Length: 185
Image (cartoon, rainbow, N blue to C red; front, side):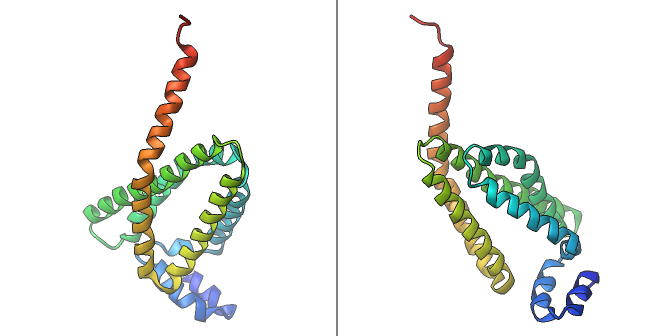
């Protein structure tokens, strides 16, 4: 399995590590078992956890992560199919990037819409709900990997349902901005 598995066995975590590593090292994802990668991902999650609770900071964080999450989703999906033909890897890259864009776009646009509301409670509730879904998704991916397909499917359905409201909100914002620059009559 590689060095990541050995380091886990040496620390007595083999019972937990085997299912995680057996699933995570599909294709060329062995790098995800590195403690450095896990540590950096955990540190970034802590920053995300804090940044998501502060209105407008979360939207800025989401804008920056548009250039991180979407390419990362594409590369991870392609890497998961590293043992397959190049055409399958390209399809995985496109689907992974599209799925990451859908999920990130829905999150970022919903947050922008929530930041427009005058009270901060809705932002905190959305952030805590995201945190719960993230943790449950990781746990499900370890113990019930098939459940992730259900969670992703539900997320896509929610994305499509929310998309129309988000589009309407941004059209309203665009009309307001145009109104600021319209000549007075």
